[in-house]
Amino acid sequence: MGLIGLFETSCKQLGIPVLKSIAFLNTGVYLVSLHSLKPKTIAMNTQKFLVSGIVGGIVSFFAGYLIYGLCLTDFFAKNAGTATGVMRPMTDMIWWSVILGSIFMGLTFSYIFNRWANINSLSAGASAGAVIGLLMTAGTDFLMYGTANLNNLTGTVVDVIAGAVMGAITGAVVGLANGMGAKKAV
Image (cartoon, rainbow, N blue to C red; front, side):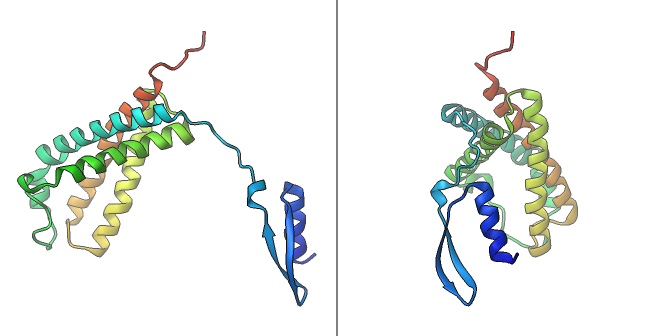
């Protein structure tokens, strides 16, 4: 059985209708009816997603202000790379953009927790949030370390740790908000 036969057999076994539209030298162009593909759907409560995401975004904003704006400002100034004029002073921040970014972070955690992971407690949210924050920040920071002169290696590593802490805080709040009003097993 060739590749085309394998494709046809696989589609038949999965119940996917295949229409052979053009045959050319024993090969063909196949059209798969996409509307017939019915992936397993997981219901997601949109209101819970939005509420926990926005609450998580608000917490992410204040956690970022405390961690980066108050606690680590001097540290990052001492561990900056050779790029100059990169960080805005607090008075020049574009606050609507910082707030919007924080809301999107909260919504990202909420989507993952509600759609894929069913996380609805403070502790599960904190642990998942720490992992997500660590992985997202490490991915971004090490790419930036390799391609730009924003931080030295020490600043990069500390930022990854700070990202994990922010992720844990945001995740805890999103998980807690998801669990509010949840039915408890009797």
